Image (cartoon, rainbow, N blue to C red; front, side, top):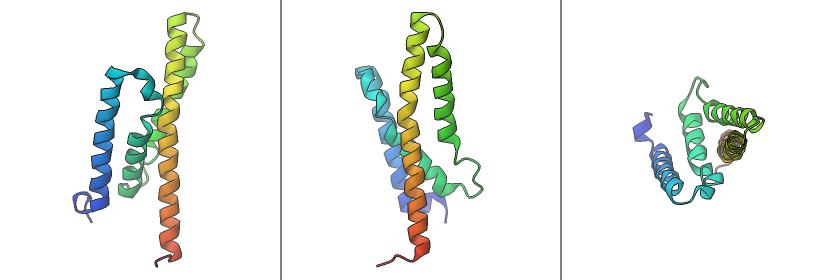
Length: 122
């Protein structure tokens, strides 16, 4: 089945795009929302990648990006200037939410695969 014929994939893509637009909108309104708001786009992106990638190559991409963001945050947080340290702390805090969303999507995807294999219908 192709990507566009699966209704669940289209719903996930729609929620991903709408929540991403919401994150960008809140970026200009109040930056403190960005500490927990990117969980939903990361969740949808990770679930789409888990559902679509048969070769397992792209599945760890959101977690790798969040880890890279956290590593940059740690690096800049240890810099001597106040501005660089503040930037590092913001990066570090901002990487928690996407990592949590991606980890939650891995858990949901694994549970659904286990439940489907177990024959838990009705």
